Amino acid sequence: MRLDKYVKHVLCVSRSEAIDLIKNKQILVNDSTKLKDYDVNDLDIVTFNGKRLEYKEFYYYMLNKPAGYICSTTSHDGTPVTSLIKERNDLFPVGRLDKDTEGLIILTNDGGMAHKLTSPNHDIEKKYYVESKNNIRKEDIDSFLGGVDIRVDDSIYKCKPAKLEIIDDHKSCVYIKEGKFHQVKEMYKAIDNMVLYLKRTQIGEIVLDDKLDLGQYRELNEGEIAYLKSVK
Ligand code: URA
Image (cartoon, rainbow, N blue to C red; front, side, top):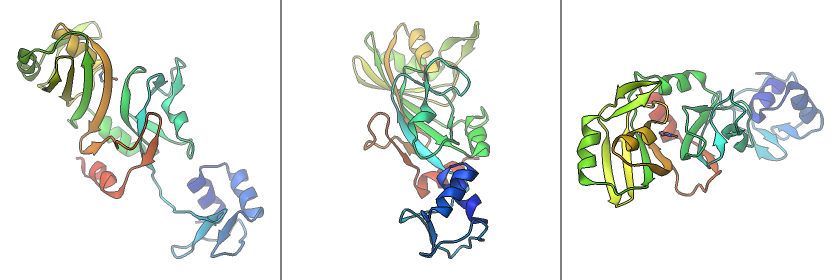
């Protein structure tokens, strides 16, 4: 691959910015300057200001979403979550969290993967931590297991069975395999309760890294990416 194309993709900059970095000797290949049309091979060590670059076709991140950020890429009702990732501007969120919901969101430039993971054919379980207004009752466990009725687009939808774990009177975790609009909030309404705080902590085998404060992110590791690729 041509050096300017390589730099453009890895650093997520424009082609002219990539060319400038090469000209300004901020990009070195095996410690030497190269022309923009140099053909980078697998053994080359490419550095940017002394830091080694690694070429990857696709990038996958986990972000601990703070409240106030939106996952939609078309709405203008808030700041997009994608703006929190400083290194790249070619990412989009996989699925959605409400503006006031916190927690795990995956961002990628891999359109095929995003499509696969959000398709309703994949019943990947997602775990949410909930703080609710009213007491959680033991019978709510059975209600969720039986599938509660919620309102979706002005009609009634029967949810798939969901597991409910009670932490204390007002704290619980729910595991759902679907992603209807405001699903968790609607499910708690269906058991005469109300969600006051909502945080997603897990998507399938990907667990929100507890070292990430709100607004922080990291690239997924090899095991996490392998899991996402293994989802059929
Ligand atoms: N369910 C909700 O109600 N909101 C979210 O953000 C995610 C799941």
